[in-house]
Length: 440
Image (cartoon, rainbow, N blue to C red; front, side, top):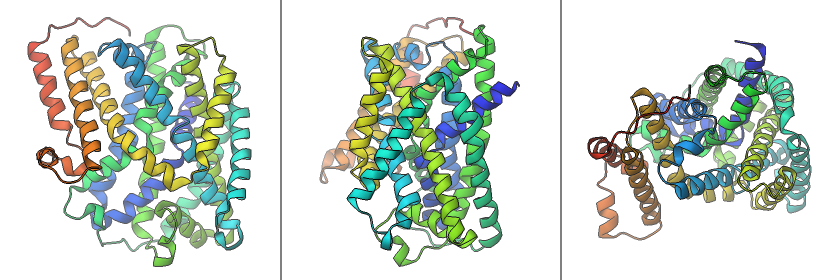
């Protein structure tokens, strides 16, 4: 492994480790109580495992996921990629990075800890101006993020986590409502959707490929190998940090006052920061949050702008960067909870499709190639079930909804899983095998 690959791995860790990665693991730890172990394992699968294999799946081909999605249908490929990039970009993930930074790095310092519109707008202006500046030159992404920002981020996280381990030792045993009577693993699995890391892997895989190619490698096999190593470096780092943050959430009891008017994850981390280092802990947490969110926002602006520039190159990369930065700024003014609530329905549709696509890519690569029908049926079935599940959740009780509730694991938002597997088997049996083109 070269030093350059190490820094690419650091860069990838920082790109993944943003807003959701910081606030959702402590929340899972708090709510799961005595069901902590299966819940965090489920979270790690979607928060680390799937993004890791997503990067690998996207590295099989020089075009990443785009060539594989075309096997379903050319129109599907375009719509899928556009929805992915807009979801992890200006519509949800980028604005969320700004508001997590605001709530955890700025709000505690305001008088009475009360949010004001003017303070939020001023912060957002500064935040997005800095993000835009650092994303303006994609070729410098590895140097700015991998070599500088990521080491600073890791040092600050370690300082907080290590101190918390010595002060917290009483696990929460009470199981909260979302986990009562349900499979803790699958609840943790679906909670991991909100990190958006698996769908971000679709975009970040191309950034990793570009960074590896920039080291001078030209052979696809060598590029793939270095991309896999970088993904593993990022995955190990994410796994260790997620488990640690979830453990902190599982060992830090929240008071009624701490739960009022704020996000649970931010309340836990703010409380732990004060417990570990007093007033200095607030500054340490502010630094962690700002670095974590800023690195992700930079990477997402680069990824989204680069994709749309390739899709329609009559508009320059810089113009796209301006457009998506402005959209992110406008949506960030809605506040953190509004952004999270707005993202959930979209994630419950797009996440299962992404997961199934990644699995299909690996099945295709590990075999001698599968038919297009085996590629298409599981995707279409997953799309239909996921879309109807979200639609029915906003409607009242009906016989149709009751029928959907009979699907295995539907109560954990995983009702698509068994039908997709059945569709795959049907596609394998009845589809005409398509020999796999050799790309690595």
